[in-house]
Amino acid sequence: MTNKTSRRAFLAKGLAAGATVGAAGTANAATPDPLITEVQPWASGLGDGVDVSPYGLPISHEADVVRRNVEWLTADTISSINFTPIHALEGTITPQGCAFERHHSGAIEMTKGDYRLMVNGLVDRPLVFTYDDLERFPRENHVYFCECAANTGMEWAGAQLNGVQFTHGMIHNMEYTGVSLRTILEEAGLDTAGDLKDKWVYVEGADASSNGRSIPMEKALDDCLIAFKANGEALRKEHGYPVRLVVPGWEGNMWVKWIRRIEVMDGPVESREETSKYTDTLENGTSRKWTWEMDAKSVVTSPSPQSPITHGKGPLVISGLAWTGRGAITRVDVSKDGGKTWETARLAKDGEKMAMTRFYLDTTWDGEEMLLQSRAMDETGYVQPTKAQLRETRGLNSIYHNNCIQTWLVNSKGEAENVEVS
Ligand code: MTE
Ligand code: CO
Image (cartoon, rainbow, N blue to C red):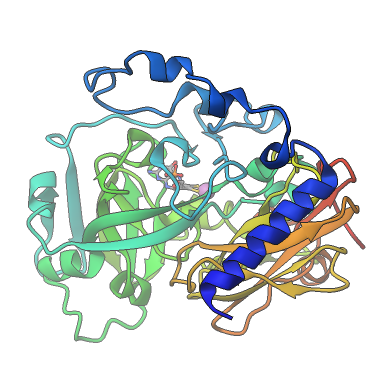
């Protein structure tokens, strides 16, 4: 079968399905559609000039595609969080304007002129870089996801937040431009060919919280980026303007914003953010620490509670996102019956390392109730666990690193709800 005939067959099937529902049925309607047959106001006058929005904003009809917070989760807006509207986005790139924010002491404002980055500690040549200095080193571009370790953290004990924006929206995926951390460390005289076993870097931000974190040298020299652009433009203030650290595949907390200092050390600092916070208390009261990598995870973004099925029976596109901190996504399966049976989804393109992958299941919906799930697999052979499997090993005391399979109950009206299956 050629592509042309298969496409025609698909369209024919689609029309037939539409006709059986007899819903809009516009294509066959006896009454002509005025939107096609009559001259509309937008064709009877002139549109806006190019001077109306020098920096373009989304059209007003898309005003609900915005970051949102959960009131009871966010006692104040300074040490706070909001969530990416992943239910309303497609593809994989998150526009900066709706990419979630997490601040421990508010988003600070500084100019490129006031920006300084110090590299000190166990280096031959401690240095201070200006923003202009950073722009003179060779640049790299990479798409990476940044997921807060607390993403899905409210779902440990039971299904709680009714929307994928809230259960899974502490994530964004952008194209970063920057200089490799390796280049900056080498400039400061770090002998990257020498014995760096047990060496660490300690990174801190210029904000009051400083958000200090220790990173093992192997990771620092592998793929970390000193980034100053996201999706082609300057970082937004809330994402660390003018410069942030990018730590591919590792928990968002390590992606220090407004980065001001990198110290090469003999060991980790064991700062607040890596002892009292960002560790995972287990059932027996002991805690896991140094859990930096984000495990493979996926979720159906549509249909979902904020994105119900509105078109009735017939062709249905199930759309979702998958990602893993251990490399690339290789496969995603989708279940409509709460995990009893699975179908392999179509990846929009091959999985890329430490970046989001869009998956689709192009299916037909007969109006039956569905328990929708997705299950990601990555190049290490790791398979995303069920909630029950995760609870078996981690108990119920954790907040961070919840990567379990999510279930949406879709009813016969197409409305979806956050549920758990046992
Ligand atoms: N860096 C600084 N300097 N201050 C912060 O509060 N928050 C961290 C990290 N880097 C933080 C920071 C946390 S917990 C996360 S999840 C990410 O930044 C969030 O990055 P975003 O606000 O760009 O989404
Ligand atoms: Co975080």
